[in-house]
Image 1 (tube, rainbow, N blue to C red):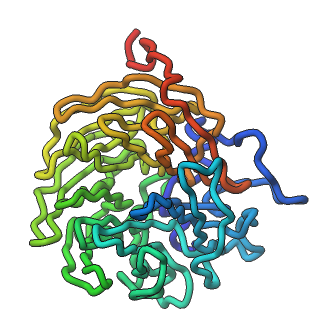
Image 2 (tube, helix red, strand yellow; image 1 turned 135 degrees about the vertical axis):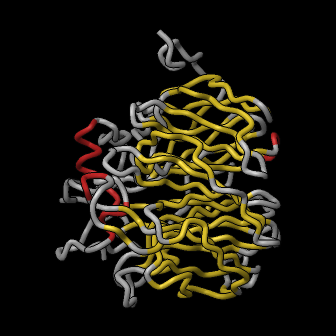
Amino acid sequence: MRTLLAALAVAAGAAVASGLVPTAFASGAKTAKNARVPTGDLRAWMHGIGAITDEQGVTTVFFSSSGLPPRGPGRDRNWTHDVYVARWTPQQASLGRPRVFISRPEAQEPVSVAQSDTGRVMVSFEDGWNTPNEVSQRYGVYTSRLKGVKPYPNDVLSGGHSGHVAAVGSRFVVFYSNDWVNGGGVDNLGTGGGVYVKTYDADGALLQAIDVAPRVREWWPMIAGSPTRALLVWQQYVSGETYARLKIATLDPSTGALSEPRVIAQRLQYYTYAAAWAPSVDRFIVVATDDRGRGFAQLIDGNGQTTATLDCMPASVREAGIAVIGERAFTPSQDSRLLHLKLTPASIELAGTQASPIKWTYTGSVGLVRSPTQLHWVATSPTGLQEADFDLNAVKVPDEKDRCRG
């Protein structure tokens, strides 16, 4: 896998060279004896993580890894990730013992997971196994106990890639890219060739296929779900430039109605954005970073309109999760901190920061709520899962530099 789609994200060597991606890892990480020193694209070791929580409060974390501890690429340079699951409750100090959930030759990554209001679970990822088109976007649907309803492998699209899934009510929405256009983008590696949506019922049956930005140089789809809408977020190629435009739209899966796609940032640092639903303020939150290395955030309503903007904050981390507790949101920063954002329906404020024992990378992380004042963060890395607790009361007031002043 990866002969074509190695270009699907920031070239890791270029990112490290630019100083935008931390390369050290939290102390205490367990490393296999004689493990290879990670070089090149760190996603070849681990890539993709997500979590769901059942009615009993048990969280299941899904992640893609090339073994445990991660082995990295094979001798043929192909990626070999399997999908693992591990259980967690707020009473546990760390995740339970991981087990393999899906395993095939070639890579199943980055895993994305969502749980509907009926308890059904959809897992989706880009898959290099047994496909005539280099990769395929695939999915499986399961009960809350991970018993098969329509288990993997099912194609969203043969040749599809970079997809992510969200739940909207009882439906699932998979937002994915297709095709590849050589040239341009990061390190002149090229861009995707359009973004598309497919919606599914609770049993995994296809309901609708919707062209969002077909057959154009737009790609890297991210998604968040509310009870009635999905927020779609993706990037648009800008010819001759080293930045992209950040675009959004909202989708009503019950009708297939799509809001008018629009640009919410003119100069995006490639691939560096994420989205989440904040139910207490009835808004989606988008966190991203511009090409100058300055983070920003916006609140988006169900009609796809921006209701609040934070123009500048510390740079966010590519593929990092956004944890939401009430009217607060939390996400990693590129300088190894956790950012605290205070939300209202019409405002976003950088309320504080705190140092992180995890040195974040671009391979994925997720925040798990232990209590209203404590977060447990789980991050992927070439040495395995990294875990840390954050006391949200131990916050530092942002300085003028954090607010991009002075």
